[in-house]
Image 1 (cartoon, helix red, strand yellow):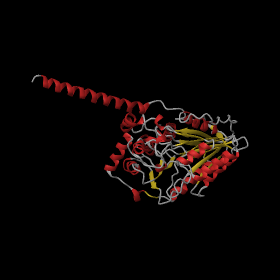
Image 2 (tube, rainbow, N blue to C red; image 1 turned 120 degrees about the vertical axis):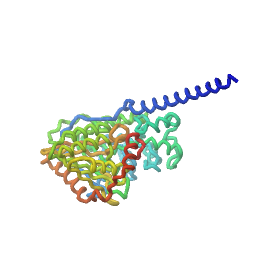
Image 3 (tube, helix red, strand yellow; image 1 turned 60 degrees about the vertical axis):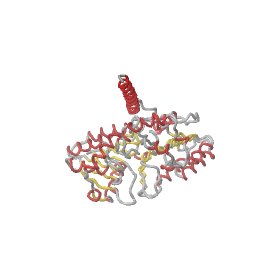
Image 4 (cartoon, rainbow, N blue to C red; image 1 turned 90 degrees about the vertical axis):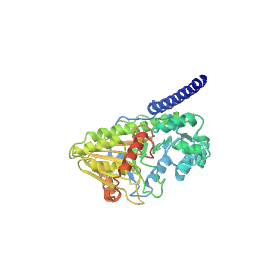
Length: 445
């Protein structure tokens, strides 16, 4: 009789040890994959490039439907040396033009970096990617598992239980499966939207966008920033870094040559992932009474960004925030700024079926204007090195034509937006749900 309690205690002790060891492995996996070194090509801050007004163009699809896509196609059709694209999903016309250019100029090196997500989740159809590869185009499906985890509570379990044997390239294209669904819950994405190509005459052109052109026919859609000359080298170098850990194909393009030093009045930098947040917070923190911060974003719920905006408003900075009311967390974050912030804060909502996917931040000082255009939403996931994102910042005198163009761009969008009260949500339940999801990375934003 005396042996039974001892045996029972021994079993309980063994189970406790197993449970503790399992928890320790899960916690260690979650911690490491939240802080591990970033792979090559991420968190890029380029050196400033000096540009003239003629080297910079804002391309606004709301003014001319399809203008961004047409500019992309023109860049591809002119290329004689290289084309580098990072985009998802790829439109059928882009696919056709890439194939045509490769057939016309077999020596042109073309690289497509893209999100590996299944087409049922908004990715590019597998047969399109396969056709590009058969034509000699390098397709680098970003190995997102190499990146940090924004949702470590879930992703560590997934890595330990499925990640070591499940690959998106082995799953059935166009079919929702258990493995593809579980993979999607990691909340990882390549959200970069850009294209770089030589112009056929010795120069280089870069186009950085807020979203893929015409990917959603119901949205009135995107904004792009076209840069001629410098910056192409830094953008291509970053994309080649991603391609290096996403494909073993050795037919990659080479980095463009160093351009001549510019003589214009616009300073431009290429920024990616967490470097976008650093630049954004620095410029907001330098604002003073009489300055203004205007932004358009689908999502605004990154805590550091919200705190920087609230401090700016308290200093007398005028805020104009143009947001999408359908993105989880954004309404709660807006309510927090309105009801708990101090200062001059104006919030409006993008309206109706013509809702924009454009994303940019515009800071106006007394004598200069700063604008950043890119694909990163103002969320923890996009600004803290968890997703692949990219943008370009411009710093220019207020009197310059491009500064006036930037101010007019936001002014048109602001005038057509709807009042804050039409979509206000001050629910405390929704607020704390958003805070929990934002902190853990479990939300959809």
